[in-house]
Length: 85
Image (cartoon, rainbow, N blue to C red; front, side, top):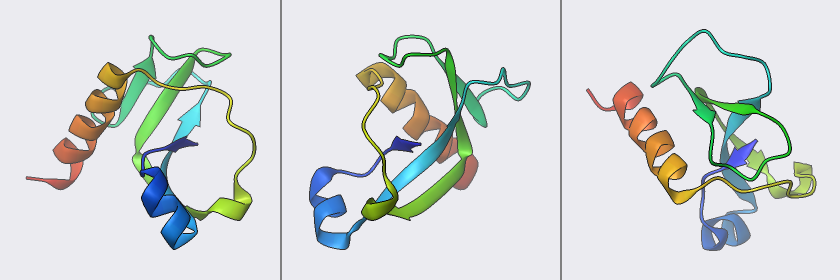
């Protein structure tokens, strides 16, 4: 999971807003998925932008990486494409 919500929200609500990640090559392109090329993740990964979730912080494991600011902006742009028409 890629956490999108800010720390203050996470701490106060006890939840995070996240999108799914996969290491399987995705046929669907942007805005449904985005390959993370500049991230600091251990494996080649895609964000499944259309699969957004709210999860309890208790369900989270350890942090394994971070996406670049540019990729974060692309993910938010993809969400806007999907929900704001």
